[in-house]
Length: 294
Image 1 (tube, rainbow, N blue to C red):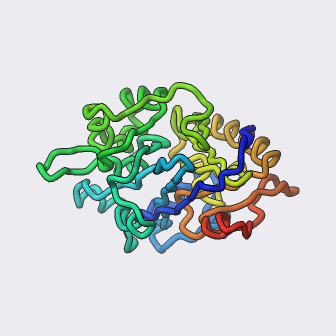
Image 2 (cartoon, rainbow, N blue to C red):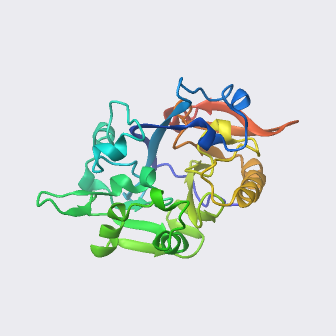
Image 3 (cartoon, rainbow, N blue to C red):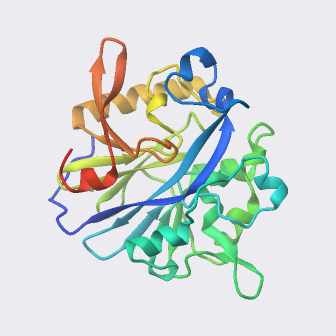
């Protein structure tokens, strides 16, 4: 369990919305039948569910501005985006501006994994029409295990890895491979989980005596808290079961808060043990958590 060494009075947290995408409900809930999962998360007449791509900005007491994930960006073709029905009225840059920051202010970018909806916004075209890091003054972090996994992507997962989303980071010398769990940046610890994809990096943020965990694709939504609710996209679902079990033991003991990247309807939740297993206790916004209401 990660413990807090001090009260992070000067740390600030911001929810950074980057727009939404639609994905097939069956793919998102795996072996769970639609008649069950649709009670927890709605689908349209085409069986598509609408999902957020919500990033987390952590401004540390040392003044570092750490962005966790980047959404899918806007540089792909219309044909590509046509598969995912992007929607919503806000972009990554607009959300940062609303929080009072520009692209040049970001000092660090933590990439949970290299699937397009998590890393697409990390790279964009510059004024010369060349692919370059979106955040010119930032260091980018990714799990070394996951980078190697993406470089030799299996045929099942390959469509989610688009080299133009991450190879320019390496070419520009701003990519840092993370090999060990533990403290990555003061106030932010990381752990690796391997069920969704090898080496998914999950950040644990220490804030005011609490730990808030960026769920990424370990926990895309509150609907994915029950043990059997595992995405069809996961490469090794039995490992996901182990990932969830080990996480829950730690989270309940530590009174962790979950921050959801993909849940369109809930930003955060606390957890509780029930007769049916771990479920959400309270749902709330990040702003409510920061203000001390939960």
